[in-house]
Image 1 (tube, one colour):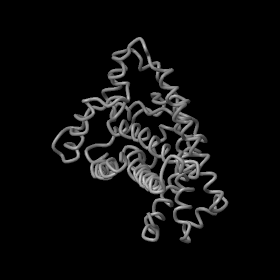
Image 2 (cartoon, helix red, strand yellow; image 1 turned 90 degrees about the vertical axis):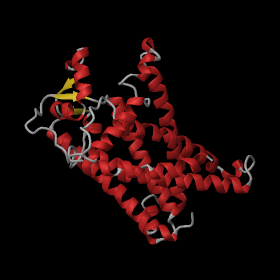
Image 3 (cartoon, one colour; image 1 turned 90 degrees about the horizontal axis):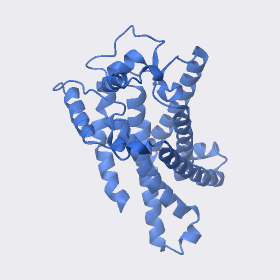
Image 4 (cartoon, one colour; image 1 turned 120 degrees about the vertical axis):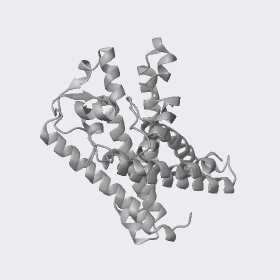
Length: 308
């Protein structure tokens, strides 16, 4: 089955991403004294809103799913109680799952509507595209060499190889979790299509893929996004939508230089958000991170008491 083939590889490749947070600033941090006024916009309002909705729905699915899965433990009962108990957690899990699938559909429509079709298909393989490219492999190998002190830091463009991996992992995960979730939405109706053992396999695939997705998001994605030396204590780019120009020139020099050559850099300049907004971003972001770590640590601590 696809998940059976995907899961060992997805878990095994984590050895590569794990050192990134700790090595992110071992060679050098981004220059001090950079302008805090000149900022470059990385994400539009629509993109940030989509990320926010996806984050909130993913956290809800993680909490309701783990609460039900661990319902026979004190920790699982506590988590489920936040959503009104076992039955209501199941109801919320089902409908939020449908909402996540609608987000996927909306995102596909958004991508199709924003593609510059005049440059199709050449632009799909360009540096502004999230499609995998041969240069991503070169970046990954170069980054590994840098972490080992054997090579200089790769000159990154708009999207890094790990950002592309995260992006497509969401697509893969939503198709697997969404497909199995739809079959489990009404198991009585699904039993007309699948035998009993088929539904058991469906539930197993759903749980395994969900566990892998949560482990990746709660550990690797959080650490790479927020706990690297360059970003600590939190990367606000998905809230603010912009990055300090000096920091961006250090992290993604190839992108900044390309924007300058194309005459687009000035058009992307913006001002930082006011302090109250930034404070609210930190409070919300760390509240979400603490909640996710609570789910992750609790799931690990009580994992022996759960029948997969």
